Length: 72
Image 1 (spheres, rainbow, N blue to C red):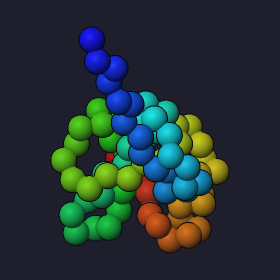
Image 2 (cartoon, rainbow, N blue to C red; image 1 turned 180 degrees about the vertical axis):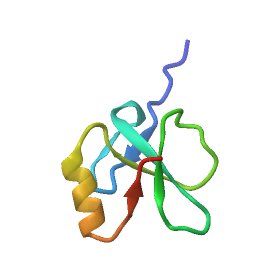
Image 3 (tube, rainbow, N blue to C red; image 1 turned 135 degrees about the vertical axis):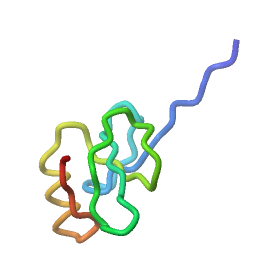
């Protein structure tokens, strides 16, 4: 049996690569340039990842003008 590769994603706040399970996914709305939280991790659209439960990473991403977040 083959070992499956663990998908890695990069946090846009701290810029660290981590396993996908350790990150929250945000999806950008097509014309608003606003990121919305994606609970399922499967919403259509361009996604960005932030460390799970880390307000510090969210603040860094906004400060660096990488994203503007909103939870709907």
